[in-house]
Length: 147
Length: 147
DNA sequence: TATTGTTATACTCTATAACTATA
DNA sequence: TATAGTTATAGAGTATAACAATA
Image (cartoon, rainbow over all chains, first blue to last red; front, side, top):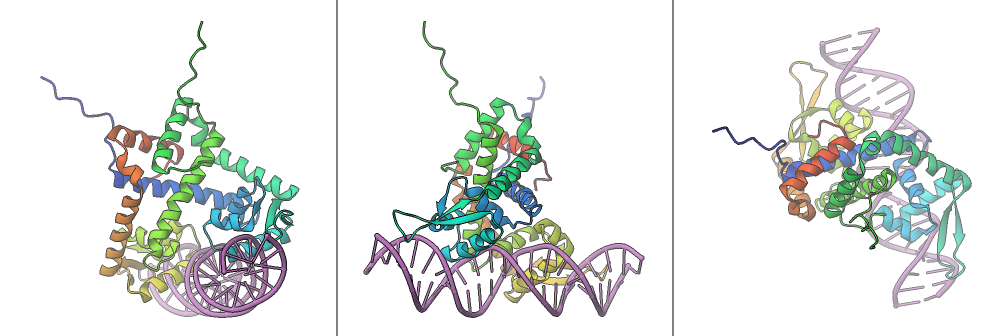
């Protein structure tokens, strides 16, 4: 009689997986902050630009950035001073100011996204089946609009 | 003749997967920051405490927090003023100050970690095979010491 | 000389509260 | 009255440069 073969890899505990998620989240933002810093942008400025693929009201940005609305004023002020975004009063409700990317802002977002992709080489190397699986598992752990 | 059945789920592109990783990382930190805030701690203070399961020199903390060493002085000052950490001069190299959790600091870390786990309910519900797969895929995308 | 940690400085991010304009 | 955005304020995080103590 032979010993039963051990499983090819041990299953991590949920706690071990949480620690790995912490690492992955930190690694993602370390990379993102570095890409933003190459353009003289802070992490929050980079995140804000990335949220503006479609124009959004200040209030919506505050919710998406998970910060108080008063902070968004300063963040948008600084991005606007650098010519990366502009404000437009909403014609339907003149209390609302929609924030839009300028041409330079759009170019900046494009470059940051491209460099993020080329930095996350692991992503490029995943096969289709692996990408499907990762998407499914992430959506189970972080149920969300995912877009 | 019947149409060939489409695959049960379409494979996301690497770019779509990057966006989902961005969402997951944001969701992780939103949750972590909320757990820290319940104890009157900022995100950085919570991250710093979580790094101190083993004592670490100031310099090492700066590397792990991905910030300049001068910032760590202030972060540790504030945690020390609240009785959550203490500094000890390294006997082998008196330039080095090792930072240790106090009893209250350890209790705080325990509680934050426990609440993180109970909040990430998706993690608890993954089966062993799924946990193995997620660990493997994460380590491919974010190759790292993972601990 | 090189390294560790601190201080000083200036800027950014952060929440709270009070305010204006609009609905 | 309620909501969107701003301003004022104080505290926290950030990088840079200069410094003291130690190696």
